[in-house]
Amino acid sequence: IYRRTEVFIANREEAQKISGYTGKDIKKLLDKINGLGPKTAVITDGKEGAYIKESGEYWFMPPYPDARPPRERTGAGDAFSATFISALAWGLDTRTALRWAPINSMSVVQYIGARTGLLTKQKLEQYLVKAPASYKPKKI
View 1 (cartoon, rainbow, N blue to C red):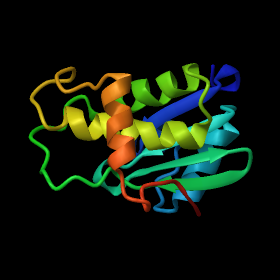
View 2: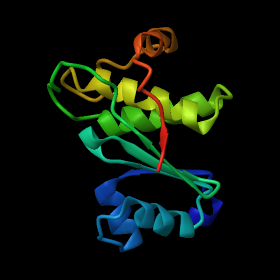
View 3: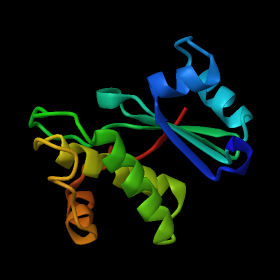
View 4: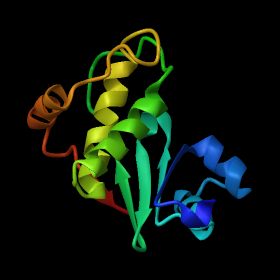
């Protein structure tokens, strides 16, 4: 199934279980997942951010800067994944999708439950407008 996968998204622990790689090197972990067949591998790492390997390039995306502490983390990964894929469905490139996804995760963790706090496209774009210049994927 991985060979037929366009985009693979998992958190670090899930990716380690699937790949069998338990080391700390995120590039090696992305390589292991990518080696299973997905064209694009995305690994989330909670409050540490997210990583992507696509077309042989590695990128890091920091979390959306927000001073409010999370209320509950349920649904953060689902919000990230759904938003990333939605951005691609809108015709955006993966690095733009990588900017969108943490925003919905940040919003969902402000509430209890997995769906409360999900943002509309319009509200998400408002966060992007307010984001600092440093809020962008960084090549690693």
